Each structure stands twice: as structure tokens, then as C-alpha cells.
Length: 154
Image 1: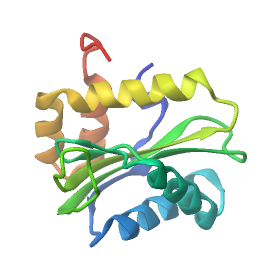
Image 2: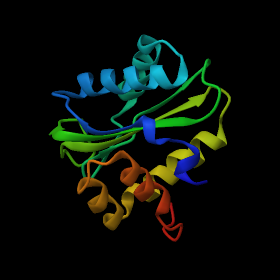
Image 3: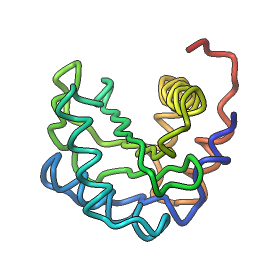
């Protein structure tokens, strides 16, 4: 699975400004709503429910908030590179500046897990992460996300 199957240039926010985890999730929900046609509040509530189970901040300044919603037609994502890091209750207690929001249909099952695994694998690559942090160009970020080799095991 290539990340370009999950995200398009218009779903990349290369210089997002957020002051908190809640505001960040609200801004991501707003963008996802425009991409999917699902109400922003429904997306936000789903993300907040998932965060209550445990933070999706995976460490190294990266978070992968995700959720399943009935109205989602296909697995899709929104990516944000933050201008300033925000506290995200991450596993390593470090603030977050790269966020890949993943939304999936309720019945996605294994495909949802495969997509999460692929995102985590791509964002575990330190060269890719450095390149993403070094640009505010949406097309370049998409290219970096999509060009990562598959050689890293999940």
C-alpha cells in the first residue's frame, strides 16, 4: 500500500498553526470534513473517543490519530506539519509537529490496520521525517510520504 493511495496534495497542511492537542484535532477534523463530506463534529468526536483510549502520539514528534466512521467511503488521510510543536500526550512525552490523520470506513478491518502500519513505517524513517520537517511545500511532502522504500518492517 502506497500512501499516495490514501492522501492527496490538497489534504496536506504544510504550515498548520495549533496551540493544543484539542485545537489540532479540531483543525484536522475541519480539513477532513471538506475532503469526505462528513460533518466536522462527527470526525472530531470519533478522534477524541480514540484519544481517550490512549494517545496516538507515537513518539519522535509524530502522531497518527485515526478512527472509523460509517460515512467514510474509502480509507483516506490528512497530513499536517505544524509550525510549532504541541503537547499530544505522546508515548515519549515529547511534543508533536507531524500528524497523519487516518479515517476509515467502519467495516475496513484489516485494511485500516495495514494503512496504520504503512503510515507508521514511513514516519519511522528518519530521512523521510527530516525531509518533511525541512519543507513547507505540499507537493514535496506528498512525494516524501509516497517515495519511502518498503524495506522497513512494521
